[in-house]
Image (tube, rainbow, N blue to C red; front, top):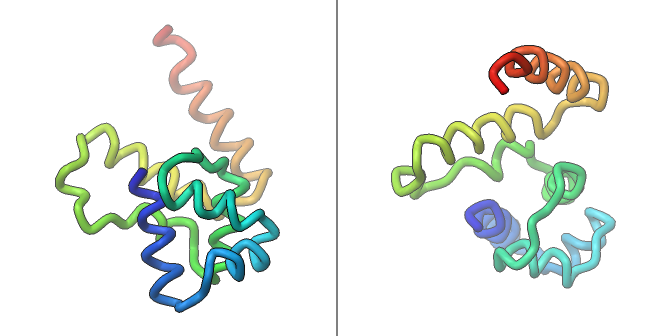
Length: 107
């Protein structure tokens, strides 16, 4: 998973261990390792914790060097997740309502 690789890249650039990131993010270091290896799919909440531990915006996890290899759908999806990653619960609920309203008649 590209997000996991990006998290590892940022962590290593900051020269901190998975254990230290786990402590900062209040997550188990084994979970951090699983995310970095693409074995675990982190929730938005976990991504927010990891971003806080790394002192970066969640959107940083979706800035890929090899984005050209992704499909257009994957790129758009990642951009949307990046936009929503650092929003409050209230803002996320508003976004959900807007999307639900926008797409409810397409079913």
